[in-house]
Length: 429
View: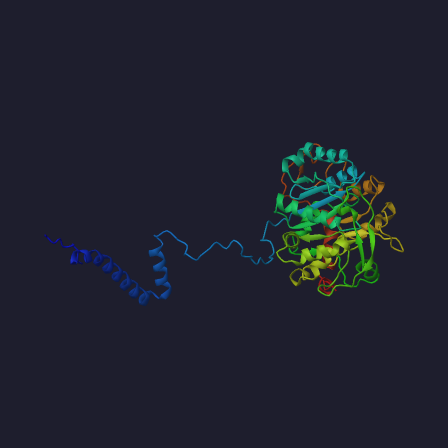
């Protein structure tokens, strides 16, 4: 029988030769890097290593995963330096019967550089809201610049409850979505009216730090502690489609210790940095306070004040002024005194840019148009941007400002509330 021997190949020198060339190349590379590190320093050698291996496509390690669920810590920072002329973002809101007044206020406030959100709440008839949207769509100036935005899905606003705060935050979010190229947010109602031109405001604000927040605030609650902070209310505007007054809960609560309460005016001029902090909420405080003020009577007079004064970063930017002339009855009532021609002298002497509240088409508004704004025939308030015949029927240079006497009055106001010791003395005290 023939024995068949199994053939088992043995390692040969020829098979090992294929590893020689890579070994020699690797040795040369290591030697080159070693010499480079001594001659050019460690940083240069690392750069050389990176440049050499950059020819290979990047590959994730086996245990490396995408950081999908990692929460980033986003710190608030002032907006980058923008144009020398600031931009303003307005909310002008109204309710039933306020269409004409809102339209008039919008024209008195308009400037092509600014952004505007207009809102008629859910109490106003649908026909009024549709008419407002139609007016904006047909106005050739508004269409050309696209800077007037109508909230078509109306919100319920009850003023004594948290719905006004929600409506303000909604408008802020819309403005941030539509156009972020603005510096200050200002909330007004259809019963507010400007006492100076937009050119006056933009010119005056050009010299101010863009992080300032004009918001009246104090921690001395006084009678408000027992009548607003401790009671609990339910606002039907949160769940009903018709406006009803708030109702009270028997149980009361203690003043919080996790944060300090502040109160002030519901009308304010806020920096974009602070608005972004409230809307985006990368810190939980704005959301926590929003839930707390849900059951707080007249929450628009406390929410933003409490937020800004409990954040040191923003508390140092708070100017204790709401930029409004408001006259209160004695003793004060729920709503301020309605302004008339008899208040004209005091309004002008206050040097503030806005006043409230006015009756629709009152004679005092005509006097303001004629003597302070130069506004005629229901048109826009004239400014450096106006051209055409009639005036302001077309747009010339939108960056051309023509400040008037109103700018001088505003400068005096800023000297008192911003450029003096009162700025820091009255901050969140």
